[in-house]
Image 1 (cartoon, helix red, strand yellow):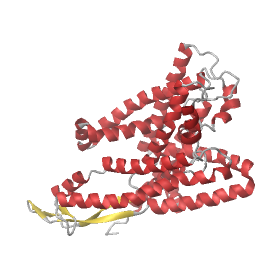
Image 2 (image 1 turned 180 degrees about the horizontal axis):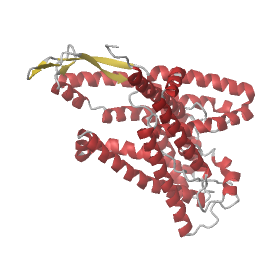
Image 3 (image 1 turned 60 degrees about the vertical axis):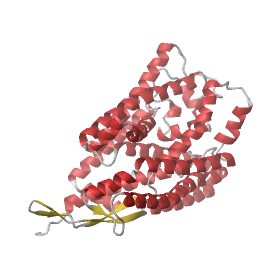
Image 4 (image 1 turned 120 degrees about the vertical axis):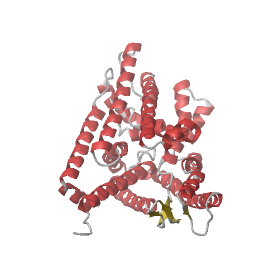
Length: 435
């Protein structure tokens, strides 16, 4: 990996792309530290550490790189875009118009991207409104005596919401700039950056709570997790595909052998995000509709068993939801009937399997067999840090530096970025046959 980056820096055009990406990253991190207008910066700095133990904000704070609890311009983070992308992807299966756009190629994909942008802005408005409402009602910083928003008039609150929504739009634009003119997928790079920005802070917390030995144990444990994730993420089942020879005009086409790769972790990190969001939803609803000082039975149950990540109820629910969403997401996104029909259309077949329906049934069988270890792998990686919460001294595994969501995203983005750099290097350094 280091050799790939060294070779990339030695190539002029790739060096420009890397420097451009670093410049966009610097602009983004500066915006993440600028507070939104109307926010008491001193009160936020004094009270932000109190909110980091609350489970409802863990995932949002993780994807915003800590900007959520700073109430900065980029407080809403990249989460609205992730949610919008997942929704549009799922609606492609449900809405025939979206399915037609997907089959149109680049022009149809451009329209779907435009719909994703519109939905991102709508979700950013909802999320920013919720964050501002929680901050104004002292739910975001429950033990803070200072007013977070000194002027809580409708006009002032609307300005804060509009500013945070504009911050999400700017983040989306920066991500697209990285994709077009930089290195890697822009949105993935920004998510990677947000998670990486939390590692020094959480490492300092572990050092102060558990000492040097505890930090060394956590780092060793993290290296084992990273190595395991890399090993599984690279694993795939290659189904051989043979294309028959066809005579079109005076040319002979086909007759080649290839394979259909099915990854062990075909769903990526999406099931973990779904499960985390669903588990934190009851706590968010109870905060918005309930009283902060109320100790009703359902609020106590949610706090002690659903949100508390050291609870066995939370661990079992989290594990079961990850397995469920893994099967659900793969079923939606990997259409075996469509793949079988495409292979049949272009004269492809799996050796020993008849084209058409038998091919779809075989793909469904293989996909079901390989999804089981993939879902168990995701569940184990996600819940494993829960057993080390007492060592880190933190109340949640999302703030754990090598927690399930964080390490899955960082390793996945890192591998994809390195592959893109290597592919571009191969294109530029490829030696022709006559050379």
